Length: 363
Image 1 (cartoon, one colour):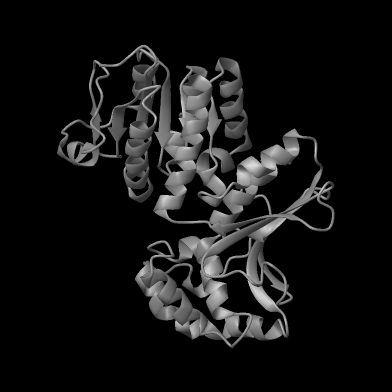
Image 2: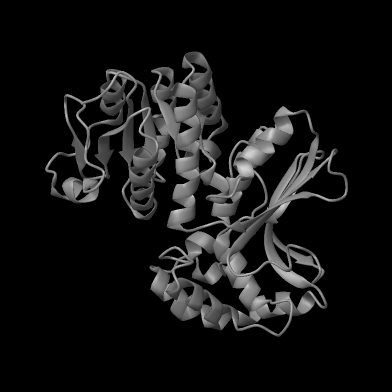
């Protein structure tokens, strides 16, 4: 039975991040009994689970109950209406990468439903959608948090917002924003040793689950470009889209039309020479795939850069991310955020941390 201070939570998406989030939500609800957290809705693209009377869905078996449900997911407008009529404050936790769900954010926020999400598309899509989202939030007081849209569990967005909100002057943001690219270049072009062949490192990364099922979805640079678009906008640059600045793709032109990720992996060894040449031309420096935002000149770019072996970006390990904030206050020594930038548990942690912030303001 819901109490007067119950907060109703709707979860959209129950994949890798969604499952990890539900486990964290279960633990959170047990640790913090007040306000009561009630899972009232959960859905994938094919199925939904909810009760008309807003009674709580058991977090212990929510995934199994969803799998057994015969209800199709309602239209997003109907989900918003359902949450608007809940007998308490409501929060949508969107664990998808769906553009359609992102497009519904302004409507939900204007209706007073807060949003927590790692969905990059909501904040790196059209600049008009970005404006509509935050105008909707301002109009109703509903909150929107999306820390995990850039650095998974790393405090990247909150750090940048703190810098901006306290009046510091951010001059440049630079770093390795992709766990996939970090792993690839730390193996292909290590600080010490020669590294492996490019195609072998891509194949290894795919086998370890570091890449998307089709590695081209990582190698085209669009994921990094989305993250930079989000940060540039927070820093005050009206970047129109991830396609509005230079993004270097590492997909050989001849392989862009491969019918599958497997075909791409099979044919990639024929093009090892191209990447080997880039590595050789770096000389004593090391090659890394980075994104940078020059706030002063309003230039944003994504691509290969060379660094001295002693540089923090060059010395990165494994699949870690590193983001350096150059500001007036910090001078020549940037504020650095570094750590795991991918993975279900750490991404869900960022989502859960955002949820706690919203709950703290709603309670």
